[in-house]
Each structure stands twice: as structure tokens, then as C-alpha cells.
Length: 191
Image 1 (cartoon, one colour):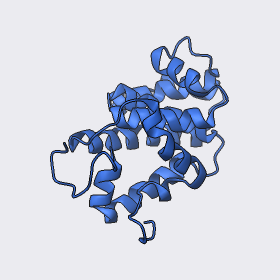
Image 2 (image 1 turned 90 degrees about the vertical axis):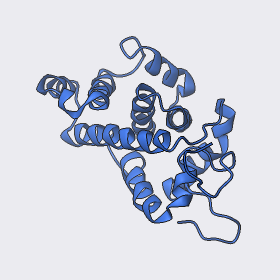
Image 3 (image 1 turned 60 degrees about the vertical axis):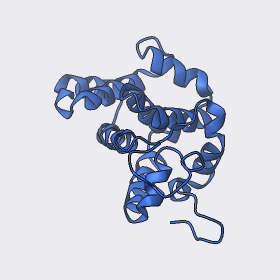
Image 4 (image 1 turned 90 degrees about the horizontal axis):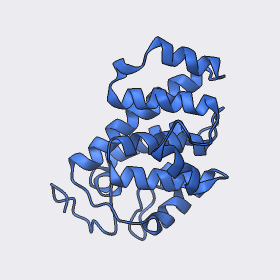
């Protein structure tokens, strides 16, 4: 049970969806940020950006965000959940591009502290073909997910177990985006 009364059935609105329903005025800009970072046109595919979110969430031990963004990444990557699991288990041996590996190392550094992102990590990413926009957005995705993870876990929200629990939200996010992330009761327009 969440640390505060969110006024919802947590099993129906798990993880971040409960707090977002509780405070729709803060949900709107948070969902807009997620939409820009994870789905807007960009040189990195959406699946790779979701993988960055899942990787950081896993390092932060945020069960809900890690499971949901792993599912979102898997749905948008040709290699699916197999690749997501490989990256999360062992970044060094995962079958990904050297550029993505370098960006994930930057994301991992951000997860520890922004000050752990070094000139050397950035130089390696650039040498592997990462643009300044990709480096910028990797840092921002990682920082944003540290915030999202702390939001979810700081309120003690419910996280369903098993990937099947994330199937509907995966379909909705991949098809419609983060503007649809906070389900509304029947008859109410989406935020």
C-alpha cells in the first residue's frame, strides 16, 4: 500500500499511474517530458531511449519503472526482451552497438551522480559516433528517470509482478504515447 492515500485502487493504477492520477496538474508536464525524451523524433530509436530508461531504473532498483520501461523498450527493439535482459545483466557483453554501450555508460554514471559523467566518458561516446544531442538526451533521460524512480518508490506505490502485467500499458504507450499514460475513468478525457 502506498505511503499516502492516493484515492485509487493501486492494483488498477500501479506504479506512477496512481500518483499521476492523484496530481494531474503535475502529471501533465511529467508526461510531456517523457514524450519528448522517449518518443519525439530523434537520431536514437525510441526503443534505445526506453532501454536507457529501463537500465537506469534497474540500477535504481525501481521495480515498476524497470519492468514497465523494459517492456516498452522490448516492444520497440527487434531483439525484444532478450536484448533488454542482456543489457541489464551485463552491459559489457550485451550485443549492442559501441555507441549505445557508451551512452549507457554515461547513463549509469548519471545514476550514481551527475558528477560521475567525465570528459573521458563523453569523448568515448563521441568517438563511437554519438552526437551532442544524443549525449545531452542520454544525460537528461537518466536524470529524469532518477527522479521518476524516486517519485514511484518514495511514495511506496504498488508494482505488479511479471511482464504480462505491463502488456496493456506497453500497447498504449507504443501506440499512443505518454499523453495516454494516465488512464482516465470512463467518460473523462485524457490529460
